[in-house]
Image 1 (cartoon, rainbow, N blue to C red):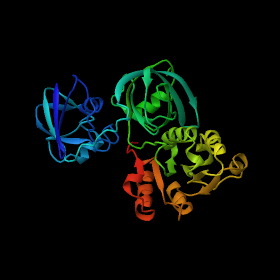
Image 2 (tube, one colour):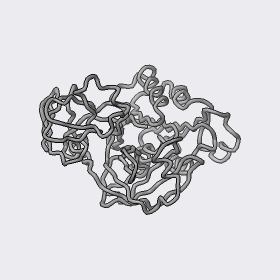
Image 3 (tube, helix red, strand yellow):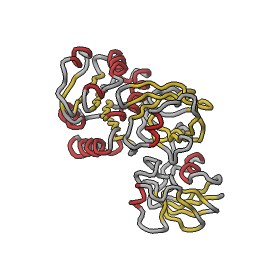
Image 4 (cartoon, rainbow, N blue to C red):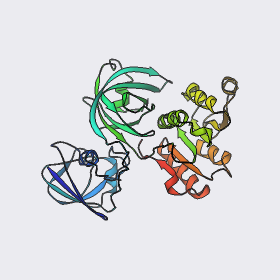
Length: 346
């Protein structure tokens, strides 16, 4: 089926397979349709159906709150039933020549390990080598469970044949409950990847600021892996602020220390505990880190005062924490929007 998209800066068209999400078809065809979460949550991908028939596979998606008429749809949840014409209220962006093109593929769960009482690390062997940029995410689908979930890649490798993810147990969450259950290893999952705009490229000559809450540290690990590998912190500063509720909720601290130890003069790590005072055991175990009591965005704002020049910031975590961090970066730090990178999914 043919999809024609009319935007403020022109018209593009692409082919959409039966049962394929319109957003997926456009992205794999090189048409940069707007999106953020790609899971039906945010509403960024909305478009107006001008002609043809399309049907939502999740009519009650939270992002539907942004739809203003029956003619509007979420491209990330909608499939075309025949040729369609869509109108966007925004301009289509141009894809960078080096940007990897997302595609559908499969993967098999090969390893799962507990990081905390409610966070696990998961590794998937994928069907073929996958290129992605540091900081990107994948849509993961589990057999028998409706809808896709977005998870950031923890690792960074060009032509990766294994992807690493961090998943947090969510009360009542169908996918997370399944992942924390028995019989997970060896299961075949569906993937659509890579996605996301919160990417790091070593040729950008900027200091790096990472503000992460909980499992939001996942994409930051990919960014730090590439930055350390390319020697970025030999010339530019890195500031990592990692927020968790209590000491028992912390993870990846050994891995963060390994990154910091490579560039001790320029890469700093601060761990913020929101729900308890910092126990003496933490600074004793990680003397190279700084620790603080408070919400991670507030701790970052206080410790970064006067140090926001030439900074590119990356933000990930629970939506309230992301919103608070964005207010800090825009209103107080006065960073230009182009230097604030985040993907709105949870």
